[in-house]
Image (cartoon, rainbow, N blue to C red; front, side):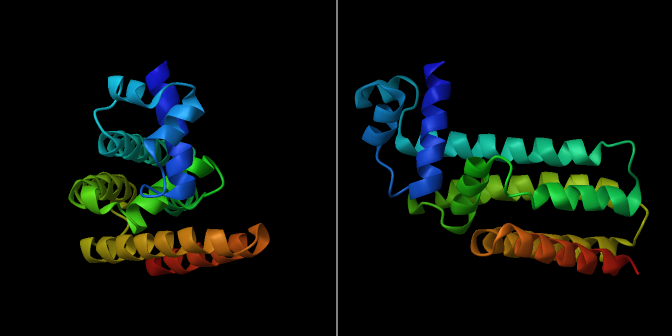
Length: 184
């Protein structure tokens, strides 16, 4: 139970302050334990961060998988559901913010590990997208579609922090319309 509380507290602090801005004593204080007690659960700050990152990836993949498994949707409608799940930055805000920080501003000491984890995440996401794209389009169009998908996802993740909810939703809807137009 304490390990879970440590990860929850660390996630919130890493999301808000980043890796370099968070110290272990803050995490321990948030959990109500002494700093040395953290080492009973994690050998280092890097190990803690990396485990939270892996959890974050699993959460994202689970959400995308749920959208892809919806039997009430097919083709473009299923891709739209996947896109809107991927660009929903309001649900699980700490996890989303943590993930964004880790991808856009990875700690130098973990750069290579995070890069590899991100590659794996993208390969798994590509599998979900390819399965959904299926026979709808050629391999060439699938690849282009996925490139645009990730570019829009990255752009919208930044815009979510800049614009109010109404403007963000207009931009998100427009982004989907452009992505959907690749099928025409």
